[in-house]
Image (cartoon, rainbow, N blue to C red; front, top):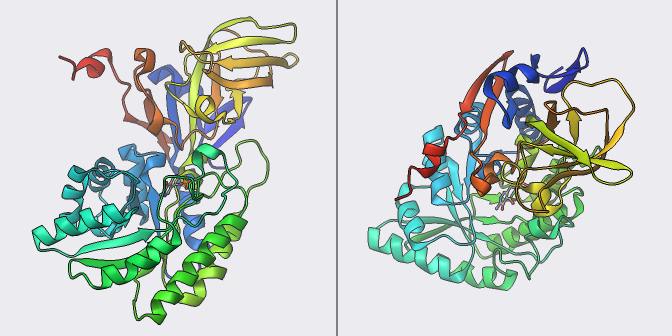
Length: 413
Ligand SMILES: Cc1ncc(COP(=O)(O)O)c(C=O)c1O
């Protein structure tokens, strides 16, 4: 059994007791299972069967070097959302030709660095951005490889903060703008259109919007083909959801079938940019109970040493994470409001949870925290960024040490 499971009433990760990691490294600490990460990468990869494809792991979900390296070793390519994620990807071992550079606001300085790198594509999000890429390419005497990000005006049916495919969202360009750019690009010697890109949202729990956006991309590819404009591939973004609360989500096979049934007839290779679906379930945030106090007649506050500084998702999106005591105490279940130590009432990790009794000093595991957890962590209230640990083949090692106050103030004058 790989991943997080119970052995003799205590939670283990790939056979390593989480309590041993907390004892050695302190809390809060992110713990990742290399086995889960590998399994989830491979499952997605295999689901495409013989159709040519490439997984570009979305570094925004979690770009800790140790994990990025693991994915690179597995054969993944990368999706970077800033020039710093591009640099991180290169440090992790990804070659420039295996990186796509997305992002709604690439600064002039970022583009200046990116254009000469020879990336697989710069995923262009506006008419103005295309002109900026072109100007740099002309000046440097290069050909800028670009993909056009289309905004298909499709509702991803996810949380509004992570839905990106509606016209009112800031991402990409409307279909007509994309169509108008086809001929412009063809007439420019310093630009090469290599793909159409779409990404309509994250944490999608139904395949229907994904199938619609893939169909729209396939139609565009056909239009381009009719005009004699060949593409190298289509980039269908990320977005496959995971089950945080036990409710069913599409399987990787259902997800890939939804994409393939629309795009396979074009014969083009498919690029996807999965983040959460690969890394989310591989990570757990371990925290300690530092206080208990009454909340109301029915429940108690359990104050943890991890909160919105370490894991922002609950405060930001009202997101649900499973929470469980690492070692189970006997006794009936009690209702807890699990809160963080940050000076904000929004700093609630989990509401109204029925758990076996907790005592001060107990460890709790906040599950499925591998994606958009450590990547979004901050120093709010001067919390140090937490340590991160990778468990691999029954052994564990620190892949990021806990920040110190000296690390935190090193840049301050
Ligand atoms: C352009 C793009 N690609 C890929 C992703 C990764 O999405 P997910 O982690 O849901 O797979 C995102 C995140 O929202 C994104 O904005």
